[in-house]
Image 1 (tube, rainbow, N blue to C red):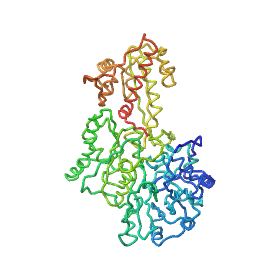
Image 2 (cartoon, rainbow, N blue to C red):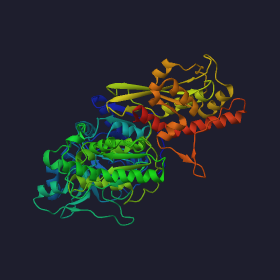
Image 3 (cartoon, rainbow, N blue to C red):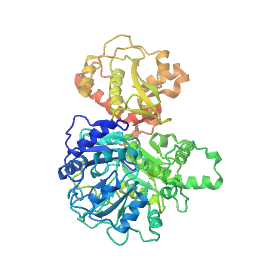
Image 4 (cartoon, rainbow, N blue to C red):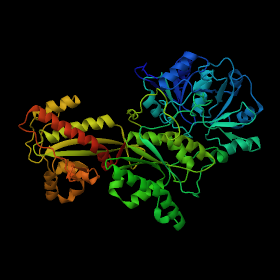
Length: 602
């Protein structure tokens, strides 16, 4: 289904702005689509009675119309207006779990649009426990049909920023209610028969439902037949999938996991950050178990890199796995690996809370494959693995007509988004600083701008600003850039070299920068010879690539160097070819430069 932007900019509403929330509710009643928070994931709401409004939701998501939408309410009294009748079974679940992360499927009333239910005679009803959702839904005063607020097939959003990445310009407004608590969509239970059927697992588990009913009678839904309309979202198509391929790393048999009964115990999922891991404090049994859990990640990563030395790998894993990688100190493996840590390795509650944002984060790092921790449990693990299996694309088909997979859009962050901001700078060195190093500086600036914003790898509450400059070993200061190189860079980027003047490299310039990259090997050697104390931050483009395992070989098997000849005295086409070659190499090296500086895209 084709998507078309209908707004110049989607409005972002603060949760504390009661008047703006009331205005958003009025716009929803008038046919607009509004993104809003819930305790599970963010929803994309419209008037459930208005078929034309429902079509707008499908258009915004690029979603097939044979998937029903769930009706969200702010008061249980609304249920009687949505369904034709409430069975005793449904009433027990409503009384026990609403408001909360459960959707109860019942026979629908005539007031609900057939577009909302995809032509089915049933409708899913849910009352979120999120206070902002509750305030918004009460202001709406009508049943609000809402799927998750993501582009169809993509990971569901658990923050307003993720909604904005997928929906900016496609919907009227988004209400920012902070991060979702659970991170997985609601449990969907069909209560139209004599026994409850879980159509989609979620935070309310089979054990939770059976405990309320007093007997073990809840069943799990099987697979859909071809052309069968699903009774609940997420049953039919490949869902929750990032651009990168996802592979599941199985937890070793017998591993004792925690958090599997998170809802049944205290009703909350722990979102607290895990403490730093000290591997020395582990018992022998704990250390052995950790090695067994980490081994599939390490072996699979090495297997991937053996086939493709340029591959980049994302790990969605626990903090102990990251500590194992750090302890191994395999520089090549670490250079090609990006981590998203959800908490303690065996904690499925923390893994569930962070799953969708974790997949999005690793996708932004432009990894080729994501290795994600699997869990083998009977509670929350079932919902977690349901989403992870769909993300891996191993069970369900791709959504027909959905937009082609793409990386998440880059969205700016407000100046107060972080508690602190770190800075780092890259210096490019050539001889004269009027051509090659100036070209690198300009191209790097474009890459930095294209990929921002950034976050510190060491602190999740710290932003990261990156700068770059250039100089020449034998340069005369104050010279204008080479006119042919100026023209070539402008043709490639739309920006020339007008703001760059040549200057001679000196110790003060070296001290001001965190990474020094020379165009040719002999220039790096000369700097290191003169200033051995800074050798750890000085590389040529070739040696930096080699240090990160980015090695190319010619047809005879010999290692190829990044050879960038000086185009001085040649024609314009030579300059353009040189600028393109430098641009291509900087694109390849960019994620490794970020990692060297201690930054990640966000």
